[in-house]
Amino acid sequence: MAFVGRNLLLAGLLLGTAAAPAAAQRVEVQWWHAMGGVLGERVNELVKGFNEAQDKYTVTAVHKGNYDEVINGTIAAYRAKRQPHMVQIYERGFMTMLLSDAIVPVHQLMKEQKYDVDWSDFIKPVAGFYTYKGNLMTMPFNSSTPILWYNKDQFAKAGFDKPAATWQELEKQLYAIKAKGAAECGTSLAGDYFWSLIENYSAINDQPFATKSNGFDGLDTEFVYNKTKVVGQVTRLKKWLDDGVLQLAGTGLSPQQLFASGKCATYVSSTADHGAMERNATIPWSATFLPHEADVAEPRNSTIGGATIWVLKGHKPEEYAGVAAFFNHLAGTKTQVWWHKVTGYVPLTNAAYKAAKGEGYYSQFPTREIAVLQLSRGTPTQNSLGFRFGNFTQTTFALRQEMEAVMTGKKSPQQALDDSVKRGNDILRQFEKLNQGKY
Image 1 (spheres, helix red, strand yellow):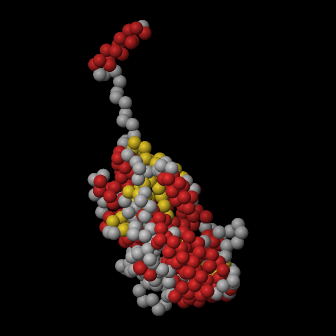
Image 2: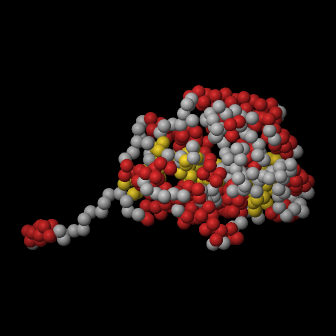
Image 3: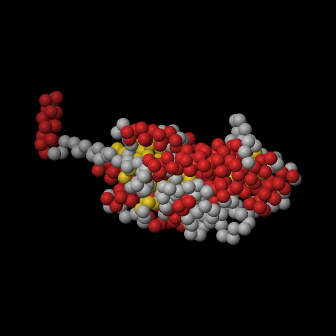
């Protein structure tokens, strides 16, 4: 019987009918990212959707820690020639990646792989931030902007419908909310206040943060925010702290918890906090645009936070084809609408925004539209397009340290900002020296 079976198998092979041909092996593409928790789950869903939508490529997403850990790990891996194909890097790492000589520009990749991407459809502050010499250098992924969250009941108890549009009127509201006992404090200081309350404050009020169009026009940029309305903004925040209107999160508490628990009436943070608010808040909350100064007739767009996906050199052509296919999937309107809904990040394209709006999504979830409208407000100026600084993480750390000196009463707002600018400019000069002639 076994002999007959072998002969039948041989006959089948000769006739080409014994078995179906083996499936072509998929090309594997590795992606390192910084999304943990629920956002990490969404990343896995995104990758699964792509992998199941076609049979040529498999994207493997690997969580490599927070943003700092990812960029540090990427540098080490590239030096050891063990780099992934794609890596998620936060916006503060743009100049480091751009001038690293380790990347394949996304516009070049997509053109080589014959994908016709309408880059002009990407939301202006998103595309503009990551564009160099007229071309997009990295694939936008999770883009956000800060908005103002508020407790509807506490504002109503103090006699207000919603937060005022200007800082001056909002200040009156917050003091009234505390005085009338509607809330223990007016606002909690966000952990990323340097981004939301200083950088974005500068953009919205059309204030220069640095020379050379905030670094877009040259590595010889210098910080100047110690000579702008930022001084008054920091002075205002310190006054609020001294008067008990603003609270700092203590040990074991986050700024978000101070708001979500009902202790503070407002909170400024990323639109990407929508998921956490919906899961954790025990209060009737809503959100609105960030305030602007009363003497600013036309508030500008806010700027983005979040990260993009960079493509690294050193891989095979067929693997880059997989990267391009994944990017094409990521930029698709259907994918973008889904990502926007499940994460709170803004849709990257106008087409995705229009699709979400067209299906009535913002009628049901109006606060989800605020970030898009705020980012798209007017035409970006040289002060609101974004911030492009070398060693940006280090200069931000200097600013944060000096701000802590203000909050603890060790320095005046002016002195702290002067010191922060001096320290930051020293760091900028170091980066300029190392990258002379590259930008």
